[in-house]
Image (cartoon, rainbow, N blue to C red; front, side):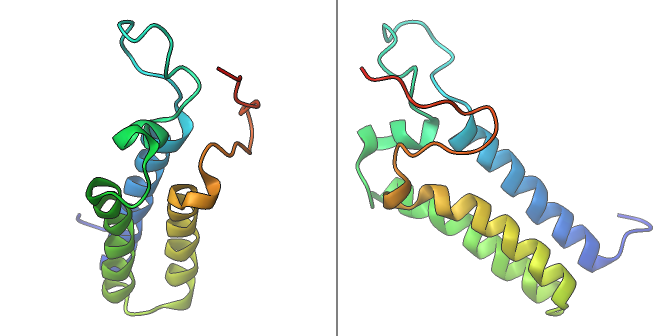
Length: 117
């Protein structure tokens, strides 16, 4: 992008992906369709993938994408400490909800407890 340094553009790319990924996989609950009878209304997309099974090839791939993007953005920001901290916090915010210990765990603003099925 004209007028934006390489470091800033990689950090913006990283932040944009992490924000979109968090929204899509971890923040929004339910499905956009009505044919499931409400079975997945209290689950986010990450919990619905592969019926909640952990360490499937799909989940391994989706876990590796933010890590690889973080490593690329760290390299292309020339390991600058300020950019590293921003990118590291962004990758933590996306990777931690993907780990098995946080399955069906809810915290944060506007996230009430999941209703029991």
